[in-house]
Each structure stands twice: as structure tokens, then as C-alpha cells.
View (cartoon, rainbow, N blue to C red):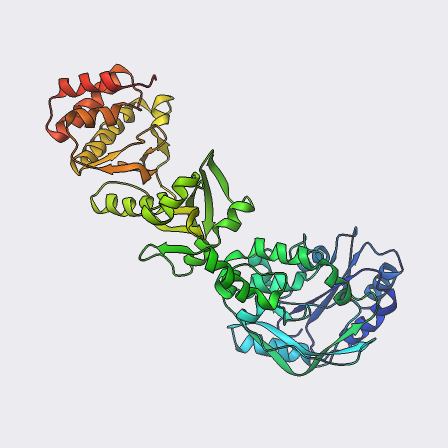
Length: 489
């Protein structure tokens, strides 16, 4: 038994009867000793399946898999899912692997863990002859074009990490696959000798793919917006080579400002800049959606909450564009202020605004997802155990009292904007409507009680905690709170 790592060669085949024997003969004659060959018949209507079955009967390390026609991505995924090798080498059923490539590629991957993909130098044969000139790998160039053939050696663990090939794509699926694998790191090496002979014929996939260009670009932009933001300054355009220039021109008339919290990962900037794509594609979980929209999104393994503010009315678009801070900016700055004063709020991550010439356009505020499991609404619904309710009501009242002592009034202090739980933690959200002034007893009680319904007993508990924290008379606070409350429990 060979001590060398097993390489799983996956051969998707659709109506490949004229070429399959030649492809398999080349693989069987390769010098690398530890291989398995998995032929996946993708619902062929010719004799492809019969050829594959016959060859599997003749050679114990050839395996046959059959599936209804679902495209090359599904066929590759099906084959790799059954593979046993440490490494994977996809090979189209009409191409030829040259002797020596697999051994060289495995050697590179074993000796250099930083290498993610080993690529064969390639040449055309069939209807076209000559060397396939592919530029050296770079992530910047990968954003505009693919320079890695579908046939290249990689680790099966990386296929698992990125979720395999995207089965929605009907063309250039290898380009999307390599972006998924390499956008955040990994080196690519190319063999010094020809390792792949790529067949060109009237029905070859390289010819048919050109018809689906718009769909390919749309899908790539939806799946990898941060990558294109980083490398191209915006989305991949139909005229791919002009993408960076076109994005720069767009920014002249649609300037944006992105501010990221100190200590946040540097690459979160690209996530924030790509938020319009995430919202337009419906990514994440909708928390709230009316005029403004609130979504829960994941980036870098971290749960984030993003608030997209509605585009202001025409006059306000000019005001927010130049004369006043946007709601997103205020939310971010007020969160930092509250934290500095010891008042709880989810940690801010970033804010972004975009203008259309002189007018305010889209704006976003990003924060970490709160660890608090409850809102004030859970108190009203009776979801909080009686043993904990009194403690939380007092904590909420003390937090509001500290806010007022600091000269801040939250003008939307409602049941959904007070979070609590996670021990004794209480947090405020939806901060853009905080106003700053000296807050006396009457205004404080009015602000606290106006939009927060409560039973008489609950109101008394909160009035006591609020009054004691601010050194006010309890009975007067309770009277004012009852007077100003406009909500019914």
C-alpha cells in the first residue's frame, strides 16, 4: 500500500462517450500511485454510462456514480462527497492529464502548507492548438477574470470549508469556486511542464459559457461583494476590465463615508461598504422592516445587527447631506458616548452614508448583536419569571436615571428599545433620537413613563428605583409617571 496521500480524481461526464476512454486511459497511465477515479454520469443520453461501468469493472480504483442531469457543479459535488482522498483533482471528461503533474502537485501541497491550489500548465488540442496562456495568479486579477483552469489540485478540506461548487451557476463555476477558496488567502503554484491538454470542440464548455456572461457577473457580485469592494472598489461590471475605473467614476457622483470602530477587524470595512448588496439580496434575518429596516447578518463568524435608514424626504436629503449628521452617524457616536458613561448599549461597529451629488442617500449603522435575550415587551407579556421581574424593573429604572443624570433624553424610550438579561445587564438601542440637555424631575418622569406601559405595582417599583437613584421624592415621581403615561399595558 502506498504511503503517499490519496488523490481523488473526479470526472463529471455528460454525453462524453467520444472522449471518455481517452481521458481515463491517460489517468490510468499516470505515474502517481495513490489515486481513485470517480466518474459521475450526469444523466447522459449516449453511451457514457456504459463506458464508465465497463472501465470500473476492469479497474478496481475506478468508481461509477450516476445522477439525473443537474450540471457539472452538482456532478463534481456528488463525486467529491464520495471521495476518500486528501486531495481532489477535477478533470473534465474530454481533457487529458499529462504524466507527472499529479506527483508534482502533491509534492508542492505537502511541502508548502500555504499553497492552496496547484495548477497545471495547459495547452489546447482538438479544434484549436497551442499553449493556453494564463497570467500569474493574483487576487486583484482574479476579481476581473479567472486564471485558474477547472482542473487543478486542491485539498478536500477546502472544498468542505467553502461549501463546494455553487450548483446555481451554469457556467464559469470554477471561477466562483476559486474566488470562494482564495479570496481571503492561500497561494497558487503552476507546474513548470504542461500538465493538462484542454480539448476544444464545437460543444466544449469554454465556448458555451460566453452566452451566460450577465448571469455569471450578477451571481458573483451577490456572493462575494466584500471581495469586489476590496479589489475593485465596487461591483464587477459587465465590461470587467473597466470595473475599477467605472466604480471610481460612480463614486464621484455618489460619495460615501465609512467609519469603523477602533479595534474592529480591518476587513469589516469591505463588509460595511457591501451592505447595499446584502440588503438588496435579502441576506440575513429580518428583525424589523417598515420605513427603516433592521437585519441580523454574520461576518467573520460574528453576529451583527445592521440598521438601514430610509432615504429622507427631499428637503431632509439636503439637510442630512451637508448640514446635519445622519441618523447612522448619530447612532454610532451616541453608542460610543453611552458606553463611556457606563450606560449599556450593543458595541458599535461602523456607520456608512452615501450621497447622490448633494443629497443624502442610503445610510447604515452596524453594531454587535446584543447578548441580552429580553426586551421590555417580555415584561408586559409575562415572559419573565416573577422572581426576576422586580430586579429587572429596578435595573431598567436605574439605567434611565443615569441617562438623565448625564443630560441625555432618549426620545424613543419604548418597549422594544430596552434590552435586558445576561446577568444584570440592561441596554438601550435605537439611539439616533437622543437629545442633550439638563433633565429635571418632571421631564425625566415624563420621558421614562410616556411610552412604557406598566401595572400599578410595576410603576411603583420603577418610580422608587428612579427616584432613589436621582435623589427625588418617590411619591412625586410616581404621580408624574402616572400622569404622563399614554400607553396601556
